[in-house]
Structure formats: C-alpha cells, structure tokens
Image 1 (cartoon, helix red, strand yellow):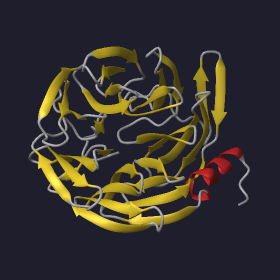
Image 2 (cartoon, rainbow, N blue to C red; image 1 turned 45 degrees about the vertical axis):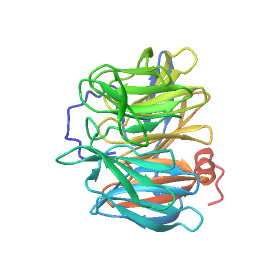
Image 3 (tube, rainbow, N blue to C red; image 1 turned 90 degrees about the vertical axis):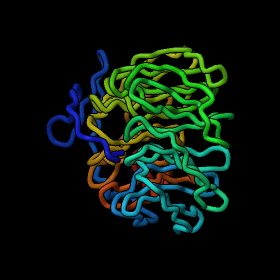
Image 4 (cartoon, rainbow, N blue to C red; image 1 turned 120 degrees about the horizontal axis):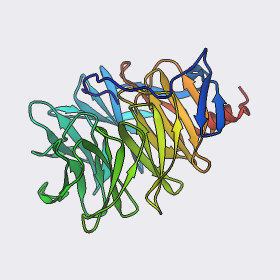
Length: 335
C-alpha cells in the first residue's frame, strides 16, 4: 500500500534474477518459479473508485476499499459486484482498515492524524476520534474488547475504547513499530524500522514474545498456525509459529520496496506489490507456488470466494475468483 509514505532506501538481499525466472535459496535447497502475466487471470468485475485505490477490508456482507480523489471508503456488494455506498472522510485513508464492533475503522492522515468510525449497517460516518496513526502505511486492528493503534514513532500502542475513543491503556513496544494485527488472543505488531515482530497479550497488555523477521516487516496476516510478515526491506515473507512464537522460515519473494499488502485465504498466503501484483505461498509448506507480474497491485483482501486486488495508480479494485487463480497456478485451468 503506497499511501503517503515517502520513498526510502531499501537493502535488497534477494532480487529477481535473469529473465523472468526467480531463484529462491533456503540453506541447501533451491526453489525456482517463473512469474506469469497477470492478464491470464480473469477479472469478474473491476470498479473505478477514485484517483487512487488502497486498503481493503472484508466484512461478512461487503468489501470496503479506501481511495483518494475523493478521500473516502467505498462499500461493494459481493453479490452484485456493485458499489452501493461511498463514505467521504475528512482526511486521507492512509493505513490499513479494520472491521470490529459493527464498524469500519479508518486511520486518517492530514494536518491532524485521526481515526474514523463508519457504521457497517447505515454506511454513515459515526465519529472521528482525535487520535491517529503514527505513520502512513500503518494499521489498525480490533480484538474482542478494544481497537488497537500505534499512535507515535516511539512505539506507543494505544488500546482504544470502541464506543468513546478513549485510550484505555498504552503499551510500550519497540520504536518504529506501526502495524498491529489481532489473532487468537495476541496483538502482533511489526517493526518496520527494524527486523522483528512483538506479541502483546490482548487481555493484559503485557508483551508476551518477540521474534526476528526479515528486514523492514510491515504488513502481516495470520493463518495455518502462523503469523506471516511481508518484509519491505528485502521483499521476503517470514513465518512465525503462533505456538512457539518464533520465526521458522523466511521465503524470498523478490519484491522489495514500499507499499504492498498480505492476506490469508484458501490455505494460502497472498501478497501484492506494485509490478508483482500477486504472489501465492502454500500455508502448510511455506513454499512459493506462483507469482503474477504486470500492472496493478498494492493492496488486497481475500473473501467471498475471491481475491479483491487494487490497482493503486489506476484507482480500481478488481475481483478475481480464488479457485480460478489456484487452478491457473496448478496448471489445471480450462482457459
């Protein structure tokens, strides 16, 4: 997700090698995959939302996507593939969206950083709290009783009352940590300015573990007994076991740089980056299976049997069927 993040210098450890073939090295083993053209995947719907389209959240009966030009979030009905609501916002949706407490939570950037609360039933802006993300490309997450947001670069993780917007608790985590993600009783926070992830007990607020990742971990997801971090520093993916809370493997994707996104669905880990809009890693074996290159990409969500993939610069979101994508990856598509 490109958002408003300024360009930084990134150290590239694994890169795309000769031609269109990517060679990945793990110890003594070598895995090779050849990126395919993203055009081979059929889009069942494409919607133009604004000047840019970024950040995707999946609700039980809707897909929400942020935009600039206008500053807004858009509700898409997955039954009809139609946009049914646009909620305008008083700032740029500049960090990951979250669903919780009957609302969509949207961190906003601008002269004042804020947190917007949008009602999922009425599609109305309910409130804008005067507390906001520490940086663009940050994130927000919801546990059973709180909304969580990192509010400064010193590592202040705020536990927020979803009704009032009051900060209930502040937990100190490593400076340069920006992206929280709730999973199974823990709030996991990646440290984009370092190479680690911190786990916080979502009941007590006590730090329960720290695990090493690849450099510059930013976006994260959970599934198949693990938390997965997309590392912007070298374009890799790290698997952290949720039982031992230790990293077990880092997979080179060859997609370093700012932006991007990650999600879990269909037993797979899905990532997107600009110019490599889709990569898929098997959640059980932690093996890169397929990649698709070409225009588009930068944020995605998995839900309603589909991949919802944005083209940041094109201002669109496209629906690609999950089963069709996996069939192409396995070489069994009828097309």
